[in-house]
Length: 214
Image (tube, rainbow, N blue to C red; front, top):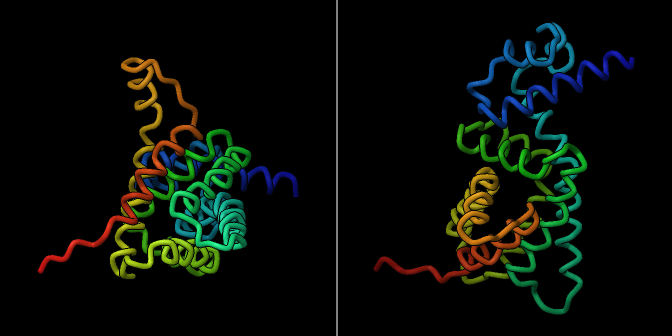
């Protein structure tokens, strides 16, 4: 049994690293099996298909992040007033940082994987996330919508995806951005500091009134 577990974990670890670096489409099962030092039959046995392997890689993070994030947002609802967008986004910091316990550098890896899913139009991932984590996702969307009731649902859809793109790009470029900030401004930031820097920007972008084209 221990051997099976070790094999499954090696496959997940290898796939995660390759997916984050190369993307889902550019990572073949042959490349994954080579890095994990297993045969293709092992991948088929544990996961059945590449799509299932992709979902399993994301699930390691989503199983930790989604319930914790939803819990933090629900806690904000105990306040007599609607939480601000800044407070809602800030409530996600702790759950995101908890992902570093899943894997060293887990916060950034998770956001890179999430970004890959959207960039490469992995439709099955959208289905997987909404099917398995839809309730947690709804908690977040409802909280954001309640905090910005002047934003129509269709517009909110776009703005939340712009927000996701912002945080994904920022964290994927964190090392390069940190080097520039240190060189040009003598500033040194860890992962949490970077997330806290981008939150006011995202909150302001979501809340800005819609400009009519008429």
